[in-house]
Image (tube, rainbow, N blue to C red):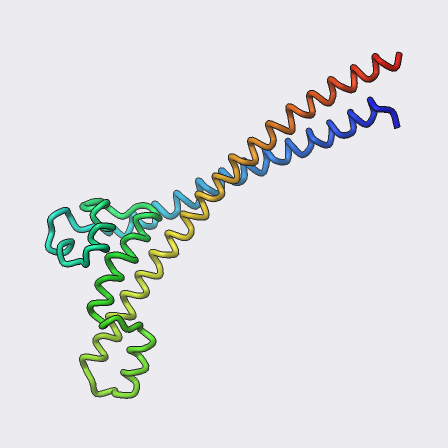
Length: 183
């Protein structure tokens, strides 16, 4: 096979891959935008707000949780990062206090063994509601994180496409040089 033919073949393949990477990056940017917008809109509809700075609700949290929640004091919960903080450091702290650190499964089992204990039954309901909301917020965080990863991969795909396109152009240029050498 002639060198110029090989250069054209490799360069054409690189150009096709570059086009595919541009299409892939477009899909990844669309996925990022779609997921991020969905997370934002769904959280906005819930109208969840962090406690304001200096509030009793904030002061009642353990120090580590108070520090984490304080960065968003008074703000509406709208992002995945905020959802994680609210779930782990606000709801999680309140759940630990209300349930003595026991999970819904542990409390439910104890309640089934002692069905006449009204206090235990109330703790079961508190744990169920709190862990459900906490889980939903952590799902919002997970999806928003996946959106961020998609955007990073999209950027990487664009960079790779650019490099491949430049190399393809150089390869086509080299095939012309190789063709002239043969003459």
